[in-house]
Amino acid sequence: VLAAGFKPYDASKLTDLGYGNIKNVVTNVQFEQMAKEGKLTRPSDGAPIKSVLFIQCAGQRDENHLPYCSGYCCLASLKQAKYIREADPEAKAFIIYDHMRTMGIYENFYKTLQDDPGVFLTKGKVVEVSEGEDGKVKVIVDETLLGEKLEINVDLVVLAIGMVPVTAEEPVLNLEYRQGPGLPTDELELFYGYADSNYVCFPYETRRTGIYAAGAIHQPMTIAQAIEDARGAALKAIQCLVAIEEGHAVHPRTWDFAYPEFDLKMCTQCKRCTEECPFGALNEDEAGNPLPNITRCRRCGTCFGACPQRIINFKDYSIEMVGNMIKATEMPEQGYGLYRLMAFVCENDALPALDMAAYQKKNIPVSFRIIPVRCLGAVNVSFVKDAMSKGYDGILLLGCKYGENYQCHFIKGSELANRRMENVAETLQQLALEQERVTLHTVAIDEVEEAVKKLNEFNEEMKGFEENPFKGW
Image (cartoon, rainbow, N blue to C red; front, side, top):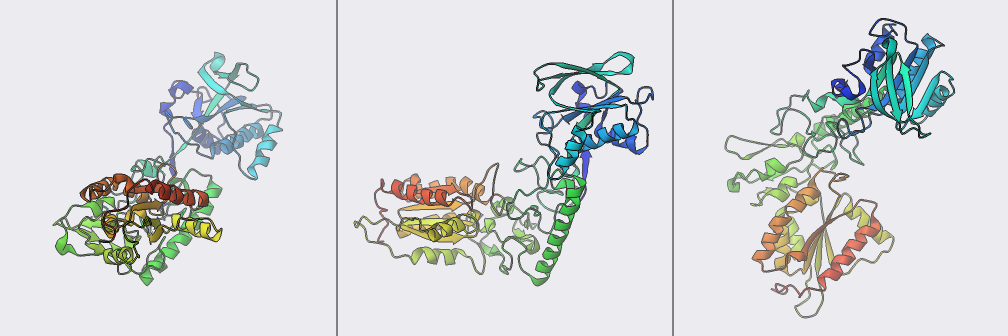
């Protein structure tokens, strides 16, 4: 369980808000330390603080700094405003925010501070922070709810800075993986250094099997949320230990006892399997051959789909098995005008969507023959060649969404399948067939109508092509 925590955003980058140039401008972390030590005084001269202004989202939700919300800052500023009011009932606190976010029951805490006559909250944008008279700090606020500029002079300005996971800059784990010593966070460029998996179904998983992130390296969160998060990560770790002891996959293919087997006699050391594995389950030996680490493997079949030599197979999922499924389909003879279309459908999202479509009695073209695959990343180019050689008129690959809001259970299977479409185009060219006969689409598990629509659209598109000349051979 990785619970290394966070560090505050580097406030030295916030010179436009006075940090580093004005002594009486501090961060919320520094203010918390001041309160802990009972020293609620101005840093410049030690005078008691009679007024303080909190600038929310300082260096957050900003393309030039942190593009995300750290989640804790609004509550922290409300709490720190309460410190000031409790220390001196005559003191004033100002909170300038863009959006005030207090989730759940914390809304009551927000309302309590709203009712405090010594706490002033207003939506606005801080456009200037400068030194005022008598050691005060002058703050100019624009874009307020009333549409007027405000000038506020206070003893202290507190910048509500965000949190940055320590794993964004330090590996912490020091793993012996070919992809590096830490959790991979940069390849997808989605999570700004956080280990959050973004899985709908697997919120605690990281891309390193058996390593579970908790707390502020998982995603921005409060202490209460981090405690709850740690419980979840600990339970997942227990599940992992049991699965490894029993010899089966941890997730998402739980209870799968099969694993990829390599026929190294035919390996060309192309490194496609080792480079494309999303989970770092394959290293390389001195000769450049793949060196499996079975306890890291999620059984996604990405290596299986990547291998041009077809030397990777599972006992329950092999090139020969899928090839036999393709060949087992009855093919109408040439000239009857009956099309046969093949759909390789991901069993994680796309197949359940089609199952639900059937349950709802949606119309699915009878021309389709569907073969479930464990991931679109596990579709080998040889499947396309076998299907087209058999006489199928078109092939549809239907899988999980990829991109910014990806939902692939194996992180980038659909994305890899899309990249491999160039290899598919070469295969079709060798067979003298149109490239448009093979296409890829993605759907979410709840997009039942969309899944059916994709099948129907592809069926109509194929009617514009001549029948596959290999039909009947």
